[in-house]
Image 1 (cartoon, rainbow, N blue to C red):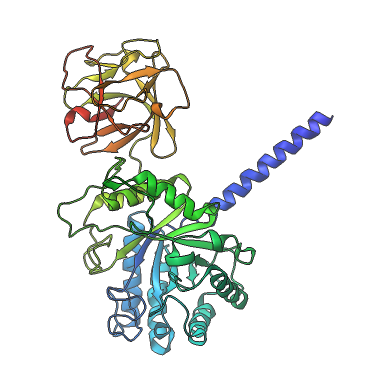
Image 2 (image 1 turned 180 degrees about the horizontal axis):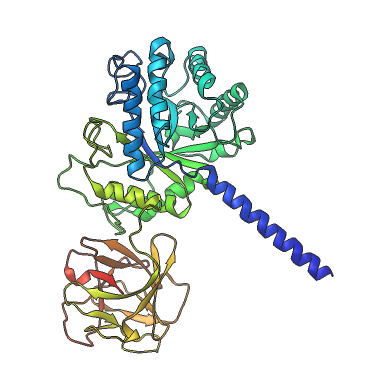
Length: 474
């Protein structure tokens, strides 16, 4: 009887935990999207008068034109897998006829099935210098949108002028005034929204979302040697969020998408020494994907900013689709490598990775021309969104770098272990080919140019050679 009661209690606790986990995931679910911003300033607008119309709008629009502009933005974001558009809000935009016009733009976005985040940017100082006008603005917003979750509030963007205590008090006063529904508000973290742990730990703010911004200059820890580390950014974002991933939204993250020379590739870059933009996008978006955290690209629709997703409001095409692909991967709208059983074919030799039926730990792995043998079949088992355990179908042994770090070291196999020697990242090159990079050493599987059946594979530092490129076939 006691065992039965214990089992019943255990099952109950598991079910409660699962339900809570689902609710926590949903707290920020569907928040992925992009910013629709003013090219000059989301605080003061193009003319410096506080009318921060997002690009594609102006104060001379008719209400129907404003509504249509909102629909254009919403449909563009929806078409790439987004469900949220983040827009500026200012006192000037919530006054008189401007407010009527801006409501039509907001409502146009909502009509496409996309929600809106209204965010206030300080004109200067990174604080609320005049709470009277700030509250008057939010009073106007709340009178119209207080009862709908299709419009969320972000009280202040990048509140860097406040210490944690004063910022939390500001937020507590805001919430007491409006008593918003749970998770209606996004409360930016301390500094330039670069850390959410202090805001997340205040019990007065516990039923609202948290806002984090991620850029390459925010964190110093990811850098090592001459380049940046995507793994460093992954860890830095994790530290900046702490235990608050379930209710955090990355409301700004971006990299330059055009106007760069030479062009920088982005899609699925897992190398260990790269440019900061590659590193921050790979690392931060991998963390977001692994933790079900929504990301909002900076900026999405903007006519001049080189961080834009689309060229402009009137040219809704992508300067660099690889950047869009990375965001869509983080949103789980797109997969690069999918768990399953594959054959790995080398681009240079045309031969397949083959363990030759060896079962001994430490046996070399080779290549062989195409056959129906299970020696050429490898099962990919994911460990998060980046690392893969690669197990041979014939023997159950795993690809293992053995910790070798020198060029020309053999590629071996070993029975299952917890060692990072057995974990590999797939870095996309082009045309469906990948480099396989070892987690321990950062060096790649390489044929050394061999073309003969039975030639042993080696490991080599990352380069552009086809000898390191493999595609996955059934």
